Length: 203
Image 1 (cartoon, rainbow, N blue to C red):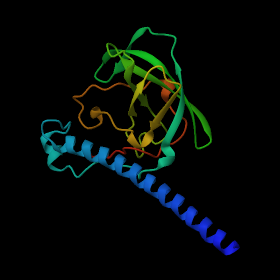
Image 2 (cartoon, rainbow, N blue to C red):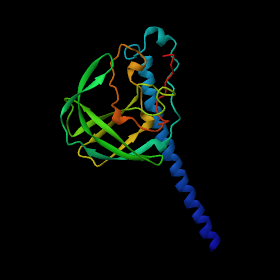
Image 3 (tube, rainbow, N blue to C red):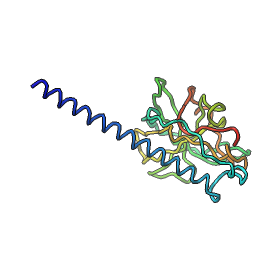
């Protein structure tokens, strides 16, 4: 009888493990599909930020390996300040945004916060939070000017998932003719976020 219980228990554990592996595989595939879509935009002359000379030598974007530990649940605290402000951009430009709220989370044992923003005129129940940030990989393996995250949410929301595997570089990293938001100091993370898009200086 004990042997039967042992066999059944092993079978159950094998099924759970297989489901877990299946979930991880599906997650990785979704990330890779989104990265492939970005690569397509870079290869398409109509949507690429690259100059013709750079496009001719383009061999794809560098990324960290997909790591599900960088898929993080955050607590969303709406900002009580709905004042429109001008967020500095490169090329001495500025565009109007509203502070949406802070995202509080724990990553690799550290308690962290990021401020999220909404572009002026895009306020509604269903919004896309814009999260510009820098971290300790900047200027080393990632773009020194910071990276971005876009997160679709339906407000009000208490919990918001952010995925650093989807962190991407601004177009100004590849072409100085683009004007890009400069991450505010409050969104500097005091740790290395080894996830998402990397950067090659030859661009």
